[in-house]
Length: 145
Image (cartoon, rainbow, N blue to C red; front, side):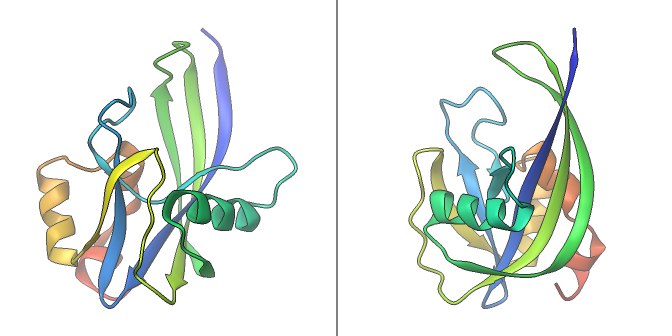
């Protein structure tokens, strides 16, 4: 089994004190029905900030401004279709939007703006995707973003 590496850009978007999460489609084989942070793969030749803005527009219909780097994590998983070992470096950014009017793509079943208390409950119930679970820390859950 070969190891593949990937680069992903994701954004923690806060609006009116709540954080946006998307629910992975129930028919998805990977993290199905779990909540995740918007974002996705950086394409070859693409700058990560361009990728994050593109992914946000595709997944949520939101135009975003990137504020700052929040976290860098490594997410290891096995691809369901190919059984390949994937090591993904994920750049987690703090982003803002001027609206909370989301239009989700076919990749997700629903969206929701969560309070920090509700995020803690999702973590306790293990209802976050692996990447989202690794992204949140006490800064998000206990204080200011």
